[in-house]
Image (cartoon, rainbow, N blue to C red; front, side):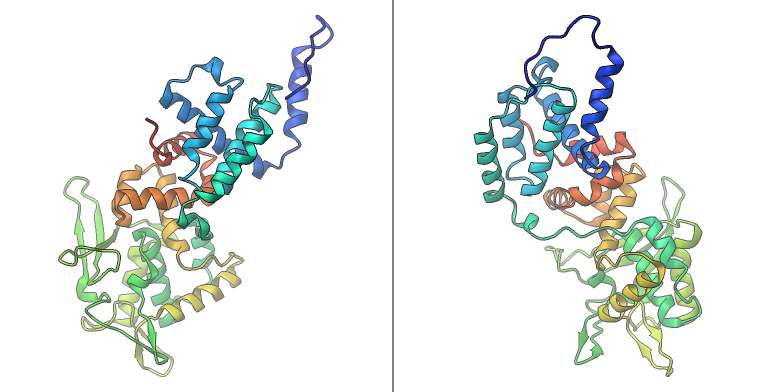
Amino acid sequence: MPPNSTRTPGLFRPEDEARVRDAIQGAWEDSTMETYGAGLLAFHAICDARGIPEEERSPATFEVLINFAAILIGGYSKSVVSNYMAGVRAWHLIHQLPWNMPGDYAVLLSRAAVKRAPVASLRRPREPYTIENLRMMAAKFNKEDPRDVAVWACTTSLFFGIGRTGELTVPTHYRKPAFNPEKHPTPAQVTHGVHRDTNQPYTRITLPWSKARKDKSRRDEISWVPQGGDVDPHTALQEHMRINSPRDDEHLFTYVTEGGDRRALTREVFQKRIKEVCTAAGVPFKQCHGFRIGGTLEYLLRGVPCAEVQVMGRWASKAFLLYLRRHMEVLTPYMQLQPNIHGDFIRHVLPPVH
């Protein structure tokens, strides 16, 4: 809380007050302020939902602050709760407003955030590959090498289809690909069509099996529309079909080895090649799940509604919310530059306010 003071008329001008705010704000790194900005956005979203008047937000009363913290605790990791509270506090400091959260309560809330953190939040969230990462990687794949062609087609399918790596690659068993047509897609399960409503072409891969699907009588599908440019999944898949010509009884991403053998694309080979390409392209290797979270991020940044992204990624409603909350810290920096989209995202993932 800033010290109590009285203002001497005429001594300080409005621009002096702005200079003070700039000086205080300069104490934090830009990246920290981005994270804090998400906290402030969440604070106002919750206040709006509760109908909290402006005079109780600026400065925020103790009742408002402790209820804000209580709504977050249990739905997010301890670091998210701490950063969001710190963001609201930073705003108060910058504007020289009193901070009505006693230190003892702050300690108690921090302990509660640790004890009630969702189990999923205890695992490190995966970093997303971005569309720019894909463009940089595209230049490092050898488009004449059958294995690279298969890996690149699989990469773009995962990203734009928001797929899981295990759905489009096969495991290794005794150092050999363990392809099973009852579990892994084949060329026979690829269809092309045109949307009736938009007249837009699409590609669909029907998955024979998915561990995430509880109803085994129904099959999941990965689909996308042509994207154009050097990261187009449609072009990548066509090139793979032309060069590797996988048969209808083979794994979809079967490729021809240097010795002329035909081999299903394993997760091990896929991940190893992605790691090599990332190194060559100067892109940080982010594990292969980064394509799924990266595709999710890309569609959200394009303004695709969360409900549509949820359908594309084949999440149940609750699972999708938990997934987004777990990845909020890694998604937020990319979304800050689009306030409207970021605001909608924050409001979508916040716990319900009753």
